[in-house]
Image (cartoon, rainbow, N blue to C red):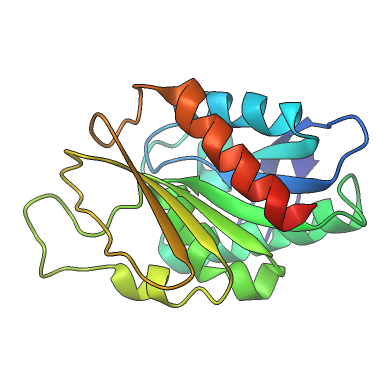
Length: 197
């Protein structure tokens, strides 16, 4: 499904659940796409719990570019996509936003604007590798709804601290989150179902 944004067309891959209890809108990482293993695993687990999923490709990816657009453009495009999904195929459903890495940052920054009832962060990049002074924790801390973070124990992008309203699941592996996907996706999907249902 192609969707208009202020920065060119985005694409949403819709996975509707039977008798849906809510919807999860997920974005990809900076250099990757919506076929990342953690996004695919999360989609499967969510569908099994009656949560519809929309995997969103940002306009720069739809246009064939690898380098991400600046944050304000990503956020504006994301907000436009979520608004159209909420008024169309996901109408009437409670929404959770999320994504992997860069997509998680976008979901955090736009949580209030999009009316997300929860946010899922797969490998939130707390800081650039080896640059802890360049923290991005303000984006995570700014979310006013429940947040679930899945973080690899050896992620070079850092580990977010525990905080009220934030659930952190530390899993084996690094930023790719390729190990134990079915297990952590099931845990996250149960958490989402409790918040959206």
